[in-house]
Image (cartoon, rainbow, N blue to C red; front, side, top):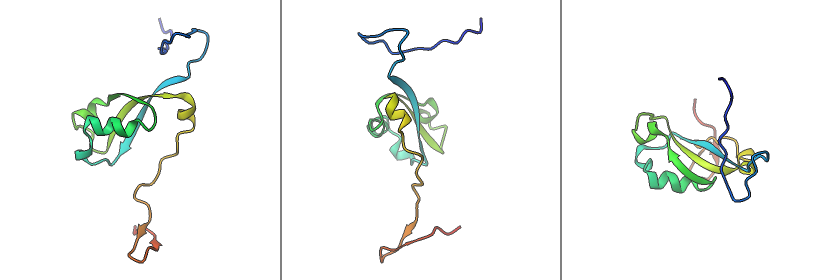
Length: 104
């Protein structure tokens, strides 16, 4: 009772004492519009990181409006080197091409 259990992906060269290079990772897409939450689109977007496994149940049922979640099988170096969250709203660009700060 109380023993931790790790589930690892099996491959032909699997050794239980060697750390696997693949890990399941949850990716969230904040503020993604509802019309872009189709399984095909989310899987295509997630392929940038790894192999899509499943979509978050709350995303599928449209219960979570703030973000969409996808579980991806990713190589560990990709997980470690994943970029930090980016401000997708960023600076506002006016017609002259010059950026200006967001109004608060």
